[in-house]
Length: 224
Image (tube, rainbow, N blue to C red; front, side):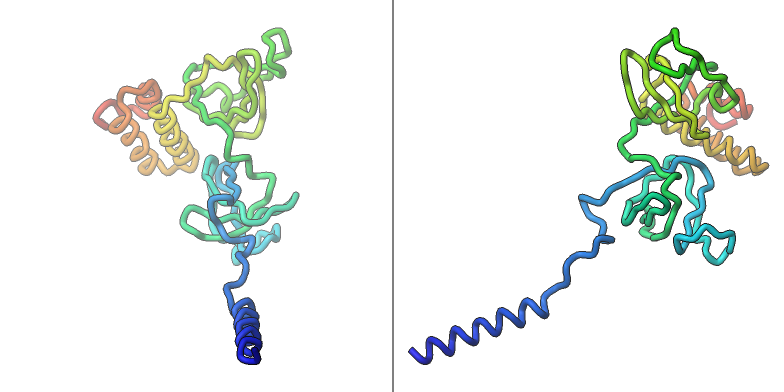
């Protein structure tokens, strides 16, 4: 009987040591299947080492562009700790992120009618260059009565007829390259932009955006 009591005591002691020396609970920063994701809303957004809005270059970690997908590690109303696709962690202002479940589409027509509400009789929004340029990538946040509420690259939202957009994967891939090329042109990096235009011509020659790209750049099928 005494041996049994001693054995039970030893087992209890071993269990206690196992609990104390076992692996620590997973940190809330650990990424896994349940980690939230988000998309960057705009181009050239600074990712910081610490959640401080300062121009000090030492706090600048890297830059991200519109559409990049990031893992959300921590979040509040002002700052979000993110993990980039290369596993680099940093901080970004929460207002620069959108939910990752938005639907990505491309505008293929040369001019778009944008309404304040999902009704063609509602007031129209004044178009600007970004809202009328073929090949821009839009994010659908809502759909109703044949209309889609879209978030434009500069942050404005409006309702457009859903039939004027495409979800074709080749057109979306070409649009990403076109967006990159246009951004490089704006930075006067003409040679780098030409590389992106040539990739559209070479990889997506049958898309409608290949024709848009050729008109803008003068680079036709085959990259010439």
